[in-house]
Image 1 (tube, rainbow, N blue to C red):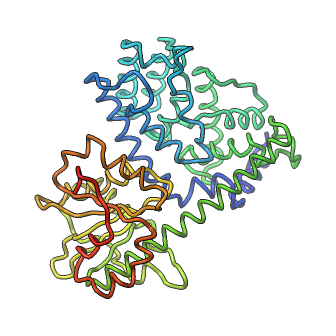
Image 2 (image 1 turned 30 degrees about the horizontal axis):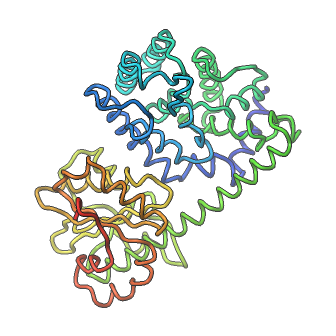
Image 3 (image 1 turned 120 degrees about the vertical axis):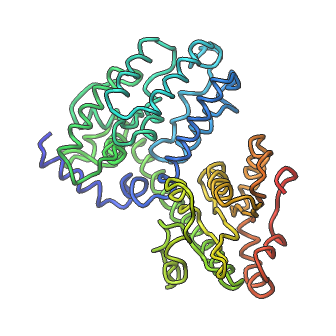
Length: 422
């Protein structure tokens, strides 16, 4: 395809408000938070394989957490977990019952995690492929993407369809060799498009995805990009529209909760910091930037930890001592587990004091919160007591908390917890 035509496709892709570029790739808090959670989850997978606690099924394994973080990205990665489900009749993927294959998979992840170049990653892929482990194919590339987003593109059916339509090719699913061939063409094309897209290969992979489902047509012909039947296209587009609307509603509700917690914190006499990627947001003519701190007080902790802490949704800071008093993670469709980890990272970085931090979540997610707070890995944590507040409780009691509260402990009136955490 001519460069001019490809540039035109990219322009359409970036201008479409419902494209993957605008609904997932840019300004997406869930996507940004996923990278560190997935990296940490991969470390847990490696550790579990090494110490023999990985288990013989996908369900309940640390690999399930990693794939849940990926599938939470919705549209682009919706089916990313399916290849890793244990299929007992087919005995695939053969990394659960076969101990040798399990060790090979763990070593592969460990080597990829520490890799600093594309050559090293490709070498590890070729090595893994040589073992011919049944059912362990290029679906693993979705994990590699979140470890090395500028070196490894993600991989799924729609992207392959889009690739074949765009480059007039016949690449197939399930082959590491063909994935690596696709990768070379994707990276070469992406370099030619610079700076129209991004070094992060998620941007161009989203373009392939949108072409693959028929969201973007080639050569002005709406059906030229279709490998699906017309009714499947209509269903795909309707689903995309519904997902976009749901995400907008969730984001608005998330923002309302941030404003409520900011209002309560200020009325209780605290300075308030909100996640740096949310500071410029406004609601009903009010700006978070205008009523919150521009940066966190100085802390003697590593820069990468500060970066993670700066993504916590709301933090209350004592005006006199400049010490952090309280913190909140507001959950919508994102991983509750990763939100808990950010709060624990903050508490463990602040010193010997035990902190009271909160998850704030929709009423419909209460069971998920309880399941996560009851995880054995959280039972021995001494640096923080975690409680949760439901959206309905915060909405119904916001004015009362502002009027009658003296400090953050007023929140205990509406917060809930479990025996292992409180």
